[in-house]
Structure formats: C-alpha cells, structure tokens
Image (tube, rainbow, N blue to C red):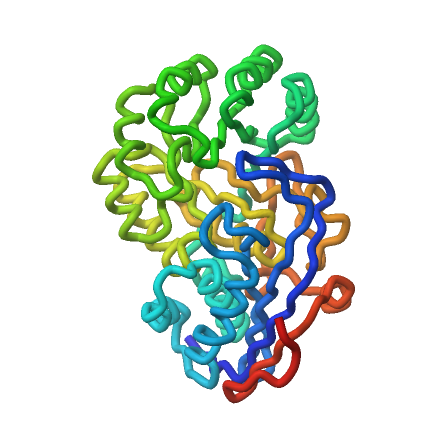
Length: 380
C-alpha cells in the first residue's frame, strides 16, 4: 500500500451543543468543546479524527483542554513531516507519552482515514472489517422517574433499535429496570453504571439478576479489575468492562482474572484504532464478545465507530445511534442514518462520510494550523 507523508495538521476547536441534555452518574452534559483533528497528506488529502473528551475530567483524567495541549506540544510534532507506511506505526510513535489516550486517538484515527483515502479504500477494508451493515443500540440517560424511562424506551423500541442501554446509579436502578421489564419483557436490555457502585452494594447488584439483563456495564471503580472479578463470581448477569480496559494489557489482565464476560471497546479510551483492533482480536481468541461504546461523538467520531464495528467479534449492537439523536445539525454529509436498527456501511474511501467545513465554521471557536512543526495561528 502507498504510504502517507503528513505535511500539515489543523486543530479545529468547536462548541458542540447536544440536542437534549444527557445524564449519567457523572452528571448532566448539555454541550462540550470538541477538537476536530485534520491531518493533511502532502498530496492534499485530508483525514479526520476528533477528541472524544468532555469539558470536565469525569469519565477519565482527560479534558478537551488537556487533549489540545498534548496534541500541540507532543503528538503533532511526533508525526508532522513524517512518512507513515501504515497507521499501526503511530501507536508506537506515541509510546513515550503515558496515557492521554483520547488525545492520541484523535490524531491516530485521522491518520487511518487519510491512509485509507490515499489508497482509495473504505477504512473498514484496511482494518479487516467483514460486515456490510451493523446493528444499532440506543443509550438512554438517567430519567426523572421510572415512567419517564419507560416512555423513552418505548420510543426507541418503536424506532427499531436492537439493544436498549439504560444508565443507572444507586436510587435509579431496580425500580427503573423493573418498570422497563414489566412493559418490555423480551427486549435486549442492559444497564450502565459508570462506576457508581462498590462491593458494599453487592446485595443491590445481585437483585439486578432478576431483570435478565444482557450485561451490567462497569458497575465498580473506573480503574478496577480485581473487585469486578469478585463481583462476577457472585452474580449471574455478565459484567461488561468499560473504563477499566484502557489498553491491550489491561484487557489481557481482565480476561485472565475473569473480571467480566464482555468488553466495551471505545476507540478514544484505548488510544486509537490500532489498539482497539488488538483488543478485538484478543477478545475473539478468548470468546469474549465486544461492542462499540459511544462518547457523544460528532459524525466524525461516529463514523470511525461504524467502521470498526464491521470487525467480526463486534457481535453486540453498539452505541452508534443516528446523528439526529444527538445534534440539531451534524458536521458530516450525509449524516448517519438508521433503517430499523441497521446502519449500512458507507462504501466511500476512508470513513465514508464527507466533513462539511461550513458546518464546522458555524461552531468554530478557533483553529490552530501546524506546518513544519510550527503553529501558525490560533490559541486555546
């Protein structure tokens, strides 16, 4: 395959306001600043990625501000004016920087996109994807009452979503899940705790077995794999690890310990597509099903999620709901759409969607342009 030479990188910092507030155990998000990363090959081809960070360090230690700093000072200089024969090289180039995975993924995914476009192939073909369509799940934030939750679930079941994920926290769990199960006894249903519990809540977590959930996602501490292993031995419902698995090595250790039976792969959380593919392959070897979680991405990040979900061990519908569920106006064209719970994989080169610069400019806070390792304009 033809290599790419990174001649320019532009960071577009935008203000992205959600269509409706989204509540988890961390809090409520109404908008966030997003750094869109544009990587330009010397032939003029652009590849796109984004930081999936929040404004606050609640999901992990990164924020959009820290990600932009890391990109400016360390990551962009590491790839600018370099020849890259394959995107898998990029992860090793970034090893001198500890963690900062979302910052790494933002530019690494952009390089995958420009590499696929340079070689005139859809990104999923470059990665080894095999599917022409994927099933879609819907994530629902914490609601005011069980009745509100049931109404939301009914809306999304009627729209055809293949899996319903309900955010839970102490006080917003059994009563809410029970109400959903009474109304919808057979739908594929899961709960996402976002680290809201501890082993002291063992008896409450055991009660969740009654609701025949396909999984409970990350019930315990964000960096734990030991207590999760203990909990998994004491409940019937499969535990799905999210925040705890931030690398191939942590996935390997979690599997060895029996910390969970399912893993949610988020590209940003693990540092990029290359590491995500390695985790996918490891899980496939150990018969651990995976699915692709979401971080309230714009269409650029959502496009990367769609592409990676074409890999064969993504057997559970992911959080890849259409653009209109999150944004009044997305920044890609066409926007991500769904047909009765199915997204058809775009066959264009790279991520398969065109980035709309006019829509980016509507939301733009500032741009920072790097050529020959020097910032030419903008500040953040």
